[in-house]
Length: 119
Figure 1: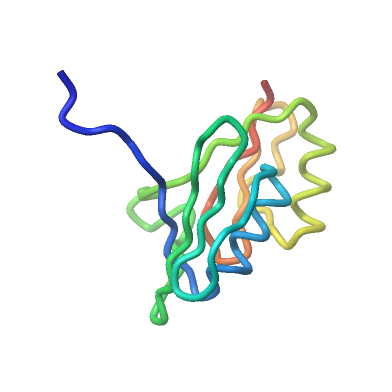
Figure 2 (figure 1 turned 135 degrees about the vertical axis):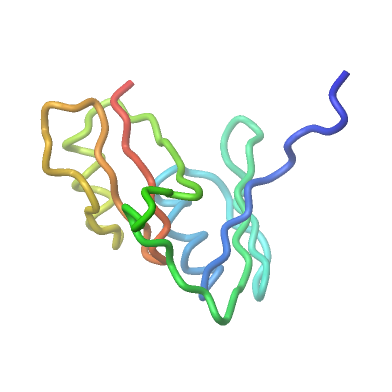
């Protein structure tokens, strides 16, 4: 028997509303709350939350020790279309040069790595 269920994944960032808006454009959903904690209710009942961290430092990808610490894998139907969309919203490529792979790596506007993965 499980001791708990996963409620929400929370990302630290300097501007919770801005990052929630970015992910709402990428994933859909409804942004709730303002201030130091902002929720994003996603289709299907999943949730992301964004928490203000004034001293936030984005992870380095790849880090000097190879650790990513955390990243989101986002399933997409068309890598090229999704790439164009996330770049227009402020993402930046981290490892998207190899077009033969089924995934590409980007950083969101706060610097968190995420992958677009062909489904």
